Image (tube, rainbow, N blue to C red; front, top):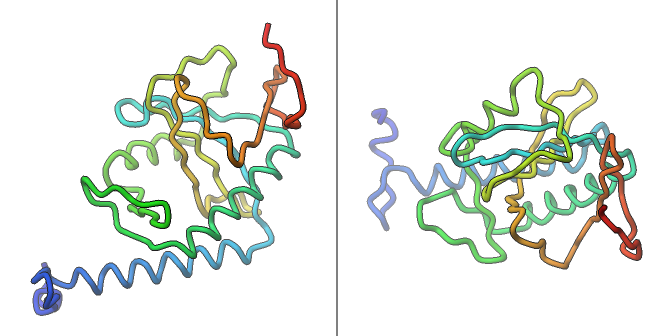
Length: 190
């Protein structure tokens, strides 16, 4: 701890500068969210990460332009919701309520291994036969015109659990990529 931060003590908890650091982090996150929302040069790619808590393995998932547009719209809605939410730093045992969002640096904890995996120059292509474990991540990457990451939205998934019925975007594997499907479609997997 530096000499300057040692003198900053939160009177209510006695913790050195925790309130100030949390306020600064929250302010920075809100600024970054606003910046992403105002950009016009954003594109989206999708990854699936298998076993993200133990041995993450990233797969690049080809998607149609229409599906990418739908996912980008949903991602921007999520970013807007995050900007309006109560933000909390990640802490062991903390269970966020519906109006609370948790943030953590990508270089800490389980996300560090995921970040290292998805930052590799080349990724394996998703194949329909790919088997996923019980703890996986779907990662929507927002990219600028140069192809650099500007944000990532992660959602855990398990092949053993159904998604909640709200806000579904349906997609179908067409042999080469995922494409969007209307809710009225009848899909028979052979």
